[in-house]
Length: 199
Image (cartoon, rainbow, N blue to C red; front, side, top):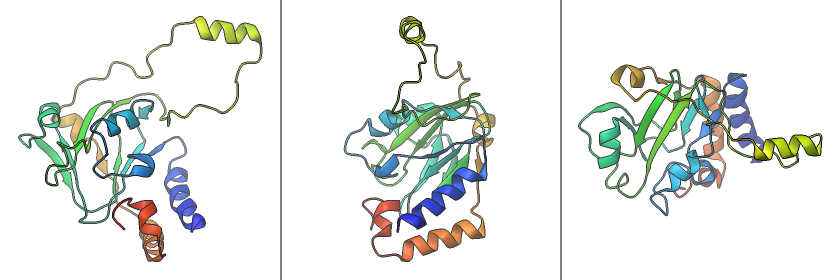
């Protein structure tokens, strides 16, 4: 069971050496959260970079991902929809710096907090997890780093536009990825790890 998950995630991560694969929602997955700020809290410590992949883990036809304008994102409306993805899991390649807005178009999921805003910068992607050890070699380095102002993780990104949004590409799964996902789905109990709450 662990081997299959490691093989799938390894394939995504090794696919692009300098790119980072972000699994939206982490272990929670892409489903209605317990609180309305869950996905923004998940995204806050992360750095999203050009070339990264954004994976919305969901079952095919079990959920969707709608890419919208900032106004639609805030109001959970669909006046300016840029793209809709129904075949889960949805994998998007982030190809341009900018702000991106996503939500679930199923029922009242958006109003319940199943929505995500990310800012893609020109830095390498990062999960936001801190190293479990000190990275300072001397006390002076630690003091200097602790007292220095911390620069913003991302540069000022331009706002979303139709051009920016269209530059996010839908990444199709290779036959090897599809096979790995099918094997994972066949294992008893696997669905709960890939698609929490939908097994």
